[in-house]
Length: 470
Ligand code: ATP
Ligand code: MG
View 1: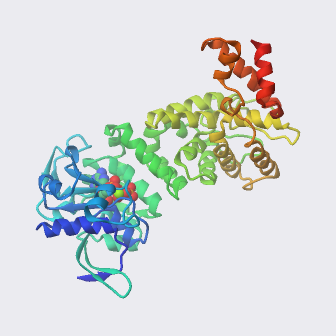
View 2: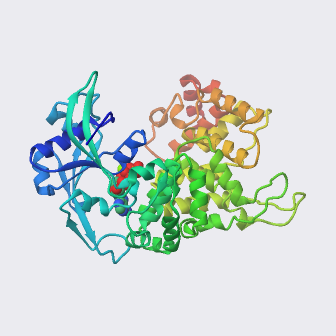
């Protein structure tokens, strides 16, 4: 038994205690334990218990039973009410998963166990988990008020050497690696994502097995693959993660278009082929948003499709941003990203070829912002920063700095129809017309004038123009 000063989530401790008081075993398990030992913040706290869902449910007000996984879910909001927790102790929006010990058998479809069997012991439950660092459980035996704060007397249950692997920064499958990847191919993606997330290496035997089973990924739904790709892109070592999925053959299945960029030379000042340029652009992208990072990774995706041997540089890539925007969107669609993220990726790739010239007028800057969208403009710059670094340049340039400054100035000017001093209702009232195409046409014509000259954005001027245009 060890006493530790771990930052346990108060609500997770309450769940464990409630289950223990009802006569069951309960532990905090999985990613939260791993992150605790790594001194990283944990976002989801999973609890495991020998109580079946039917026994767990009545213990927590407003909990609900998710049949598919044998999990009872409780929201922070309800825990707070039931156990009188303070605002600081528990966030309303958090969801705690309480899952009954499981022992699984038979995976004929390489996706999910043929049947879920309740396990009797925590050791049995840990055995079915993917990697040793995730097969750790923490049992809270008692809590006491220490010198200043609550201290817990905890015990770590670690039958597979997870703590040792955390120390040596290694991802190692629980049990026989090849069997584990054959059971569930999503573990292939999880291994790489975890390596990138934690900056860990994949242990040799695990890595060999992973490589040997990559083709099983074809059995996994695009939703689950897409979710892992996005999680990977959000990690600190995203670019290395993408290199890893390329070198293991995963990229060939997930984004084959990127593989086609290998060996496509770019001429001119470029020293990298398109593929390396894209990887290095991702590494240099200044946004941590995985959607923006994906757009950066894909921004030159169609250079191989449009490449022509001509011109002073030896090669040209005419219109690659036009074709590429469609391809990038298609990839985002394949990875099942929400529609708004697909559209954002399209826009960022479509307009990534912008040039800044100090002679550009303010209205030209406003047109550029309007085309890219106010909501995307900072991300467009983040992509460009990546693009520059990926071409071997410095982070920024006087041109880019000046453009950012000028964009900043224009963000206070009218940039969309809703920023105008008049709206559709005004047009209809003044001209005494019903909703129709004409209303939109007039608004657009007015907006064209305003984007040229923001000084014209007054009710007085615009009302006069409505009468003239009507
Ligand atoms: P994070 O929350 O940082 O994404 P995690 O390890 O907590 O990482 P979850 O998807 O939240 O990942 O899963 C919780 C736990 O469930 C894992 O730590 C692991 O023990 C187990 N687990 C999840 N997916 C699998 C899988 N495909 N095969 C075996 N065990 C799994
Ligand atoms: Mg988790």
